[in-house]
Image (cartoon, rainbow, N blue to C red):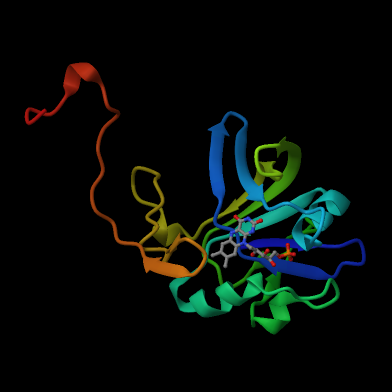
Length: 180
Ligand SMILES: Cc1cc2nc3c(=O)[nH]c(=O)nc-3n(C[C@H](O)[C@H](O)[C@H](O)COP(=O)(O)O)c2cc1C
């Protein structure tokens, strides 16, 4: 879910699934924004106004509430209150995080790349804050999304549990497993 605030400080929250890691140096994340000429996109308007936003993982216990943040609320109607999420602020950062989410990212707007093929936009942000509870960080520094109660999404209405399976080393041609 992407959390934003407008110039009056009114907050907004909406679920987005087309979110993609774009690299680590600098740490960039992109998301795809639907066409906004005919429909108002509060998330985008607020990012343009304030230059900051948050990405908050959906916790298993909040799936249904998270789904309904996609409803077309008016600009002065907060999805936080309508969908029963709690806005959480950190000093000096204008965009609200979601208290109920375990993994949260604060970003500053970097750039927006129009995609003429279907009038969508790739919105790129730089990670400024990363909030992760200690108990879901493994010894090797990786985050265990299953431990964090994370949610997977397929399409626009199906939600899944995440379960940890296995991990593998960097894939080198010289070190292929025997069965290959
Ligand atoms: C599961 C799910 C995933 C969605 N993913 C996206 C997305 O990646 N990009 C997008 O523009 N809208 C997406 N939407 C639609 C937005 O949530 C919806 O347009 C919302 O009203 C936007 O709110 P806003 O006007 O406050 O920005 C998704 C909706 C659902 C239910």
